[in-house]
Length: 152
Image 1 (cartoon, rainbow, N blue to C red):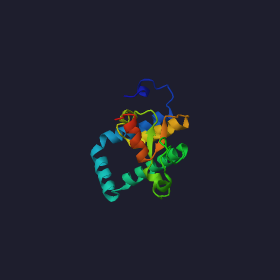
Image 2: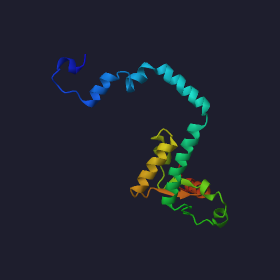
Image 3: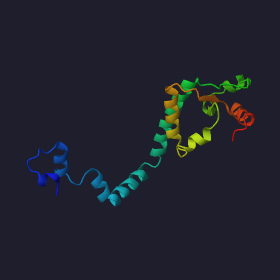
Image 4: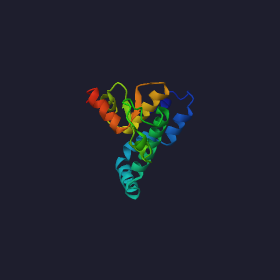
């Protein structure tokens, strides 16, 4: 029994009319057809085995590239190490690491249940708001920083 059965003089909204015409849609459909939806999902994933991985990686790489552009796309080089040979390598950009200036990266990524996608989106948002908490470091500089600052 709907509210309109009790109060027939009230006008019916478009949403309510749609719900009355199609009662088995949206949430109700998902709840009432769980097994069919699960089987359909399995069949689709069998036909497209790497789709989620490929699309997720592509989107994550786009976000990461935007972060790198904002941070300057090269090592901040806080220890004045000669990077000339390292920078000439074509894969130089791939090995750069996003680093927290004052440490605390493990605690921060733990807040996102170690989900890189959500974490990179958060970092990008912070950088767009003007945060100076992040820098790019090559693996060598990052390791030196961990040892010098006794980060774990």
